Every structure is written in C-alpha cells, then in structure tokens.
Image (cartoon, rainbow, N blue to C red; front, side, top):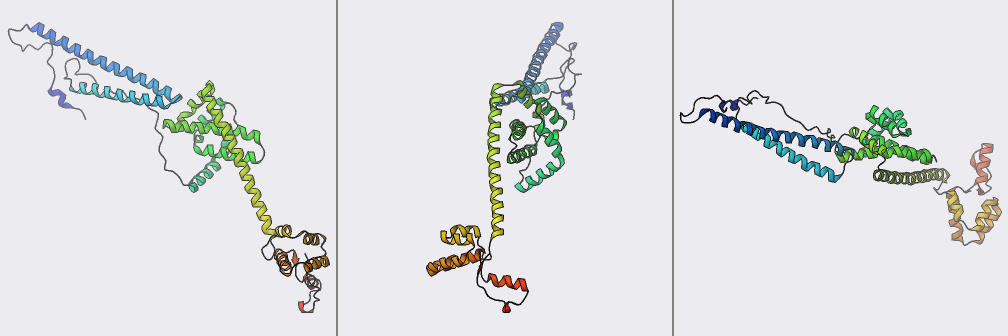
Length: 357
C-alpha cells in the first residue's frame, strides 16, 4: 500500500512568501534551499556508498562460491550484516525525510536486492531400505548415462556432460559409481576401476562443496571443474589424497566381498555333502585316526573291521557312529544293493553286513 502520511508533512517551496516583514525573504529562501540541497547530497552519498558496498559484496560472494573457506564465509556474513544495518539506516532517513519540490515526484518503489545462490532444499533422511529402493529406481532410469559419465576422462567433457544432464548431479550417482568400482575390482579390472573411481571422487567433491555452501549441487559443477582445470597445487593434492584413499577402500571391500562369496559357496557345498546324521564327511574323515583313514582310502572292509576291533569299545563306537551320520559308512549296504537289483522285499534279501559308500 502507498503511505499517504507523507503528504501531511511537505516542506515549503522556495518561493513561499509568508514571512515576517523584518526578514530578508530572498536570503531566507536561499538558506533554506542550500540547507535542503546539502542534506539531500549527503543522503545521496550514503545511498551511493550503500550501492558500492553491495556491488563489492556481490563480487566477494561470487568469488567465495568458487573457492569457499570457513574464514571467507565468516567474513562475508559479517559484511552482510553491516550492509543490512546501513540499508536500514538509509531507509529510515528516507522515510522520515519530508517531501519537497525536488523529491515529490521520485519513485517510491525501487529497491536493490542482493542475489544469492538458491538454497538447497533440506531433505528428510531416508532409511536404508528407502535408499536402496531409490538407488535401484535411479539406476534403472539413468544407467546408460551413468556409465558414460564414469568413462569420461577430460574435465571439460565431464563438466559439459553434467551441464547437459543435471539430474546426474546427486548422491545416487556417487553411490552407483562406487558399487561399479567394487564390482570391477572383484573382476580383476583394476585399471578400469581406478578410472571410474576418479569420476566417483569428482562427484563426491561436488556434493561436499554443495553441502558446505548450502546450495543446490548443480550450481557447484562449474566452480569445481574450474578449480580442477586451474591445477591449484593444494586443491589437487587434497583431491589426489581422497582419490587414493577411495581406491584403497574399494580394494579392501572387494576382497571382503570375494571372501564372503567363497564362504557362501563352501557352505553350500558343505550342506550338499551332509550325511543322514547331519555331519560333513570331509570333516569326519579328517578327524579319524590315520589307520581308519587308510581303510576308507582303500575301501577295505575287512581291514576296517580289524582296526575297529583293536580299538577300545567306546572309541570304536564313537568313530563308527560319526561315519554313519556323515554317510561314509552305510549299514546293510550290500542288502540295499541287492534289493534295488532284484526288486524284492527286504525280508527275502541276504544281509551281507555294512558296506563303505
């Protein structure tokens, strides 16, 4: 709304003739006009000073987005507060200033706005299940583009690609590239893994820069690649340290996953080997005394019976039961073979005693 209250307090014009007869009217008008002009010039200088400080602040803000640091951000925040205080003071004086013939027709709606990068929208943290679902959907939608980005080599090409496909500038891209790196290392494709890891750490640096600046990650793509192309020694050293650390973590994780896969395969094989009593024949065989192992190696039943007869009864029963539970020793083995061969009831078969499977 327009503030009409100013119309109740307007300074007299320079040609006002309602003065005391003893006062030199022309001199009075001259002094009034000079005082008003001087006051207006002072206010104008304050406005120019405000505009200048705003312009300098915008330059510093733009420069800080390319090379942010905690100290620089702290200084910028202090300067912002100082400018805001000065702007409030100027507006207050402007509001209290009476209108006159020099200012009555000036615009009352103009203002200066300091442009800042759009703030990043805060997202609610997702559960591991939700993150996995989102990554799966993201991969299904953009996998071909993700692989193209992972294979790029030049910074200029990467910057152009991410500018063309801004939807890839997100945490999901970094997660996809990391998983791809682990799979490549597990396949012994170490050289390709190192290349994709480079692209992965680039995306992680972009995301960290956006988090630090509290802006949308897409706005940080040009700034990041500009610094990488400028070959700043300190920045490149930090980047290479992070890259080497990432590659080591990938190698370690790949070894762990391979070990887990081998253990799962071994467990599956073990489950397939288990005998009727739930024991693993390999484990049972390795636990037998040497003389019993020789019997099973030779498949010599008389020798086995002789060795068992020379052992203490309890020990012989213990080993025999474990052999049966693991399937190494099949009681009535000959009898079962005969039943299957002639297809007759078990009561008419000949019991030839235990056998070795």
